[in-house]
Amino acid sequence: MPRVILYTMSRKQKLSPEAARAKAIRDKAIAMTPRRRRMKAENQRKRRAAKKRGMNLNGKDFDHNTMSFVSVNKNRSGHGRGTKKYNTKRNA
Image 1 (tube, helix red, strand yellow):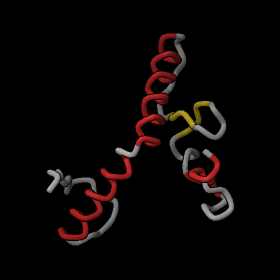
Image 2 (cartoon, rainbow, N blue to C red; image 1 turned 30 degrees about the horizontal axis):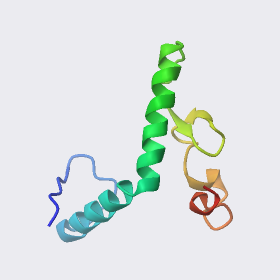
Image 3 (cartoon, rainbow, N blue to C red; image 1 turned 90 degrees about the vertical axis):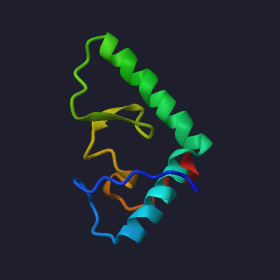
Image 4 (spheres, rainbow, N blue to C red; image 1 turned 180 degrees about the vertical axis):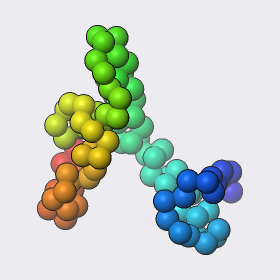
């Protein structure tokens, strides 16, 4: 069984301990897929290069849809259009 660390201080959802453990395992499995690992590596490369150029990246993430740095709030799946209309997994 994979080791899962739960942080109780900053939970975003009110889940039972069992549900929180199951969610942590699911989230870790999704984060470790080849697609997500490629995206994370690309984000890190782009962020390091932008910082080297002197860009201010406070509160910004790299968006794979617009291929630019956008605010963390804006960089959510579908950009407010919903996931059924604009599913990033199908477009990537």
